[in-house]
Image 1: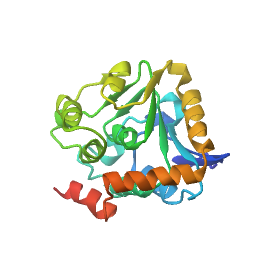
Image 2: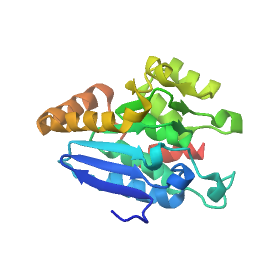
Image 3: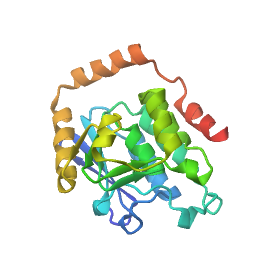
Image 4: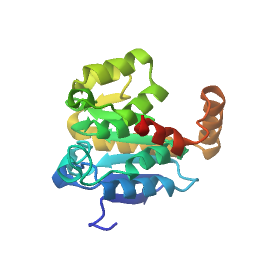
Length: 228
């Protein structure tokens, strides 16, 4: 793994670790990080058992790096950000997120995209774009795909910090553990999922596709949300 990369990717047995690597900026998202994250998901081996997505330095993700992108995202447009979410949608391997400390705005979108989220007891998720006077298209996309309208409206219209057990109650995270155990527990969950026979995981995916349906063109679908 290159220490200069914004995203570390390492295979550990049948698990793939994808780590956001801008700890000095609380893993805030830049165009380069988005490009590397998109490529990481596009290149996931099909025979992989599970993906573990985490942040370096003891925090998950503080959102878009507005210091670099600018408040209006014009200094550095994040053209690859939509592509990240289309890539996650197209990836058929289960994703576990280790939510340490916080997942804010764009960071929350990554947590909402996961199949399983393990959070710390003092960690929080916040979709606060409404207070900035802007929509939250990627967060709204995953809330629409995975949650009820009532939960989605609660998250995006109130825009507050949703902490610990409250995240579980809303179904936004799968479980809450002690703050210092988030990464260990996430690794254990990811390894457990990865230990199951691939035919079982593949069969579950196919059945979910039959029940839930699939978006025909994810690239276009996610991109259209930005254009509105």
